[in-house]
Amino acid sequence: MLSLLTGLLNCLYNKDMKKKNITIDDLARMVLKGFDEMQRELMKTAKKKDVDERFDRIEKLILADYKRRIGKLEEEVKELRSLLAVG
Image (tube, rainbow, N blue to C red; front, top):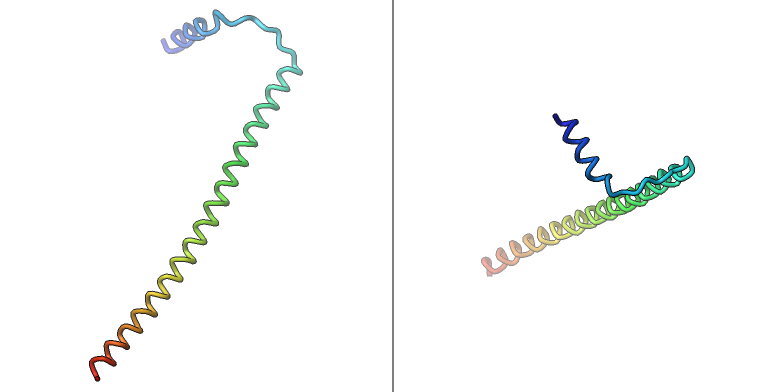
């Protein structure tokens, strides 16, 4: 049943298409074009992944610095409180 439906859809889809003689060279060019397009897409994805990794590293460094600075401020506040309580 599925193959009958697939055949019918292919027939309807292809009925208005002109028949075209395709040579081996034409086919090779089409395949090469497909591979070139795929390579470009993969390069974009790889570049995006590299950028994402760099941003992740920068974010971790910034967060670590903030954590250190906040810890230092908390210690200074404790020290100030102890000095004010004594005075």
